[in-house]
Amino acid sequence: MRIAVCDDDRRFCYRMKEILEQYEERNGTRVEMELFFDGNELCRRLKTGERYHLIFLDVLMRQLNGVKTGKFIRKVMEDHDTRIIYVSCDENHAMELFQNQPTNFLKKPVRAQVIFQNLDAIQKRDRKNQKQFFYKQGKLIHEIPYSEIIYYQSMGRKIQIHTPKQIYEYNGKLSQLLREGIPSNFICIHKSYIVNRDYISGKMYDKVYLKDEEVWISISQKYRKSVREQLKEHKGEESTIHWDRRKKNAGFSTNYDRKADEFCI
Image (cartoon, rainbow, N blue to C red; front, top):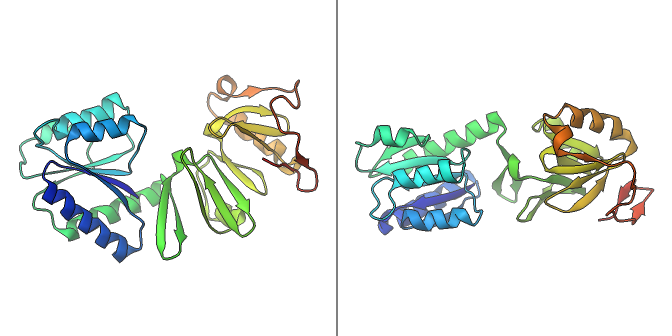
């Protein structure tokens, strides 16, 4: 869980850091956090492409206040997925805050137990709504937004999760992942690959092109019919996915392993 805390009261930020570390230890949930001491600092970070699952945002900051920072997140960044929890001593800004679609408002001083309850509720909703993928590594539970996952790849007894920023890895099997259930925009194209169709920008009869990874991945014969059907059902597929049956090897690695029915990437 990636969390940002934005408040010009440094003591509050460091106290929140302690509380979030306690939550990580208590729940075994991996928490990555960043502290920001004014709204401008947070907005500059968001402009770089950084995203958070949750932002604790003070209302009455001296430079860019929490209302304007929230507007920047929702209107300028067009980010309606990141959860915002407002924190403040002042309860007189309810209507202004409402337009920024906050998850909650907490009155200072905030107790650790209240933070824990809010984090538990968010994780519960995320599991129910299939917004986050949860996996266990060691003693910690990690989570990644499904929207950031380009594809899953089986590597022996491990599963690699490819995202635009990095590759995560944990012990598991793709067959188990399919049994447990994943969002409908994920397509199994091979016994070793499950891809997010939102990242597919090109397709041939026997392979798909993933734009962010800039790679082609083969579709094994077993899955070709079902992949074609799922992509055709995808809204707007014909306008966003380029089908090319003419140039069979255009821009594609010819390092093909026929035994495994896959291209070595």
